[in-house]
Length: 82
Image (cartoon, rainbow, N blue to C red; front, top):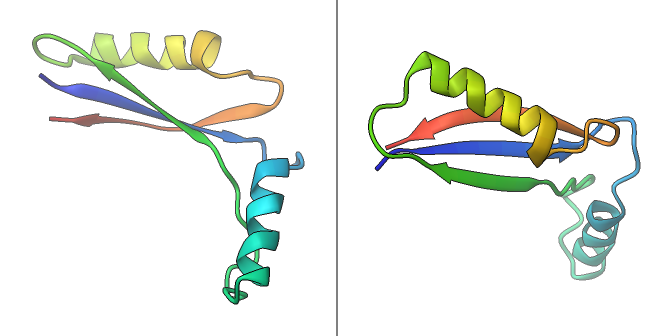
């Protein structure tokens, strides 16, 4: 069964407290090469049958209206994984 994967990230202009905490931890643990960590979420929508263009449009609508908070998050990717 194919899966539609939706990636959501905090808006670039907003502070990402989780990412900031991880960045600090990495530095303290000797991994200072990583200067900026941002943490988002991945949502997987499994579907039966073929993923059509209409279904992808519906997935985009669901991602924008339900799976993300448009005030603080951006949907950065939608892809189909077989």
